[in-house]
Length: 462
Ligand code: FRU
Image 1: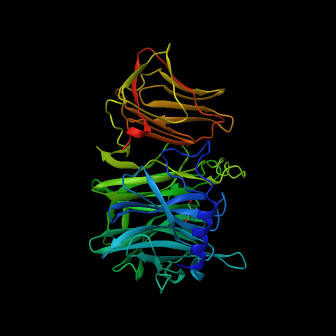
Image 2: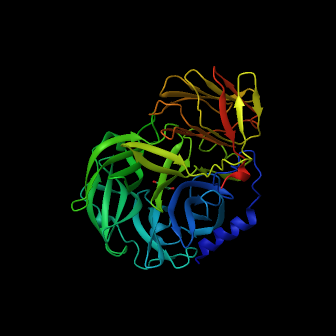
Image 3: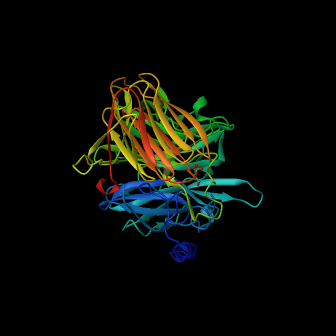
């Protein structure tokens, strides 16, 4: 273990101040202390799920990126471990940036970006490998970097070249990597037979307005009979963090991607840098929940941590339409007895809530959560349109959510202490970060029919 890595481990042990905090998530992953951003290296390896993450142990603001590490057996309860990677080599000395994981010959390989800021302020980014036998202790490859500027195609910038996501196909390894050319985002595809020797293969996606100035954290995977390319675009001040899912056909012999359809993945604005992995045939994705304006809200000295992951969600296609389902066993057992809400009746709850309703809201219905002067209001405007209104001291926001099915819709609402995720019929999905002044108090329903749902106790979640 390098000195820089053991220093981080010691620092975390001796500075952890416990997790009690008004905003500390109950059922979302957050780091014990310090700053967290992108999920990295998601994989099921040696009987457990591994979640690595962009991590600054020393401050509640972004900087000095390490790879934090946590493991889980159910994707819900996480055990945090000591960091896996530190910026301790020449080629990653300004940060071990985002990347991914893959298993080969019983070893766990990580591929990540080494970020280097030179004395004159210029930046170089390269791709590097670390590997492990036990999934806990990692060794950086002696011949890093495995992809440096000499392997960039014509016109590609050496300072925006990051976030490799590895995929295995037909005996070869491929990595999609974020890049820019002439200040516009593009996604490159590299190829290797052994994860160590890489060659540029194609520019898989470029010349699209959705790619913005840079398209970070690209991901590539098969969904049904199509390929999905996901990326987090930096578009400009009005739409700073749009995460797109592009569906198309991929010709593996040329690396050409033929786009069929492109859409936004999450309608809530606070969903960024997601990464996916495959588990037993399911495609599971975990995002970083971040709000652009509130990203440093917890960096005021009163909180010792900042940043959380979204609930893992399973992605699939049904008749070509994207379905996103939270990966939570909502345990519909006796102890989660159903309740009925009518406008005369509200239900008290504490600061977190998991609500699962099979009957959903009828058009014109409203669901209201209140605490003091603050409120969260969800209303169904038409068959397919919902409106989410947040009136909080820290932020006032209105979010439109479109759901593609028009039947009686299943509604899943996951409210943690500083985030809210809504799944409307698993087609209208919205993630929001919020910092209420005080705990929520009650939930009420306004509408003509009765609203039936179940409040799930955390203990009953699997
Ligand atoms: C996305 C991102 C990545 C980069 C990492 C650095 O949030 O900017 O592109 O690798 O964060 O922490």
